[in-house]
Length: 232
Length: 405
Image (cartoon, rainbow over all chains, first blue to last red; front, top):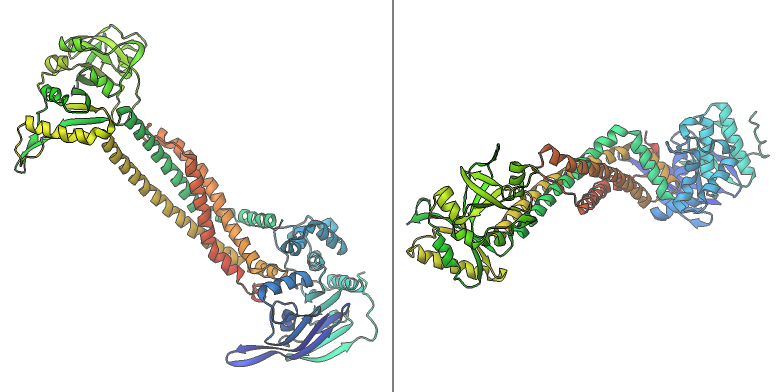
C-alpha cells in the first residue's frame, strides 16, 4: 500500500543542514495498523507530512497504492489527499459554525460527489454519532469531535488513514475509545498509520516504527495482533 | 453543493462578526447609495431639460438687446430693438413667425385678491411660437384686431387664475392690472413649473396695450423668431445679424448691439453643464465605492489570517488552490453584494427623501439601470479587492497553515 525508497528531506537551519529524513525506507501493507513513534525532532512529523502528501521529499520515491507521488504537482497532490488519504489530527480541526454532517461531507464536496449527504451520514453511523449529525463542533465533547474527524477521514473510503497524535488532546479514557474505533476500522480492512509519542497508544498497533534523528531505528512487530481494547 | 456550503460558511462568518462586517460594507453601502441618489437627481434634471426643449420647440431663435460698445468701450445695455425691427425680420427667408415681446412686473387685482405674476405683452403669434394653448372651453387667445386696437384683454396662466379666482370661473371677469381694467378672455393650459420660472403664473396682453398703456415703452425686450425648419436656423441667424446691423447702422468695427440665441443650443449647453456636474458627483461617489473596496480587502485579509487553520484543514482534505481562491472570492463578493443591496435601499430611500427635504427644488427620478450599474460596479469592486486576499489564502502552505495557532 505504502512504500518509500530512500526518502530524504533536509532543512536549512541557520546555515547548517538538518536531515529531517535521512534515507527512510518504509513499507506498509494494506490492512496493516502501524504506529510511528519517536521523540520530538526525530522526523516523524516530517515523514507523516510526506506520507500524507502535504509535503514532498527532496530525494527518494514514495509509492502510494502503486503510484509514485513524490514528484506530483500541487493539484494532483490535493486530489490524492482528497481520495486516498484520510487525516485525523490531534486538535480535531473541524470547521466551526457548520454541523458534524457538513464537516464530514466536505471532502466529498471537493470531489463534486453526488451523494455526499448519504455517504456522510453513513460515515457518522460508523463512528456512532448519527444522532449528533446536526450539532456544531462547539456543542460536542472532545471525544465526539474526534469521532466526527474520523468519520470525515473515512468518508472518501481512502487507501490509508493517517492519524497524528489522535489522542493527544483527550483524556485517557476517551483516548482508549478513539483507539478502539481505529482498531475496529482496521479489522474491517482499513490501513491505519498512527503517529504518537505515547507508548500505550502505540501498543494498539501491530507494528511500531521507532524513529530517531531522521532514521528508522527499529521496527517492532507484535507477535500476536493486540487484543481489541475494550472501551469499558 | 460545494457552492452552497461555501455561501453558508461565508454568511455565517459574516454574521458571527456583525459589527465588523457592517463597518467593512459601509463604504460600499454609502458608495452605492450615493451613486443611485446622484443619478436620480441627474435623471430628473435631464428629463426636466428635455421637457423644456420640447416645450420651447427647437425652431426658435431669440433676439435680445446686447451691450453697445464702441471701440471696445461698453456703454451699457442697449434699448434698441423695436417693433419695426420685428416687422423687418418677417421678410427674412425661412422665417415663419415673429413675435416681439415686452415684459414687466406689476400687481394684478380681482376683488379682494391680488398677485404679482409675470406680465407679458406680445402678438398673437407668440402663443404659437411658444406653444401656449388655451384650456378647452376656457376662452381664446387675443387676435390681430384686438392687438391693432390696443384692447384691454388678458390671457392668464392657470396658476394666476387659481391665485385670483380660486375655483370660480375667470372667463369674462374684469381684473385690474396696474390699476387698469382688463377683461380675461382665456385661461392657458398648464405647462408645468420649468424650474427657472413658472410659466403657469403669467398674464399675456396685446403688445400694443402693454407698451403704451402698461409700461410706456418704445423698445421691446426680445423678439422671438420661428424658423420654418430647424435646418434653416443658422441661415436665418446670419440673415438676422446682417439685417439688424444695417438697421442699427453699425460700423464694420462695431460689435453687434444685440444677441441672437438659439434656444435649443442654449439648452444643450445647460444640459452639458448638468451632465458634467452629475459626472463629478458620481465620480465622488465612485471614490467612496473604491474606499469601500479597500475596506473589504482589509477585512478579507484579517479573515484569511484568522482562518489560516481552516484553510490548512481544507487543503489537507483535498481543496485545491482554486477551491480556496473561489471560496474567499465568493466571500468578498457576498460582502460587497450584501453591501450593494443595502446601499441600493439607502439610495432609493435618499432619492425619495431629497425632494421632500429641498421642498421639491431638487426632484429625483430613479432609473432602474442606475441600480443595476452601481450594484454590478460594487460586485466588481468586491471581486477586484477580494483577489489579493483570496490569492494569499490559496497560496498558504498546508503544513504551516495547520500548525498556525
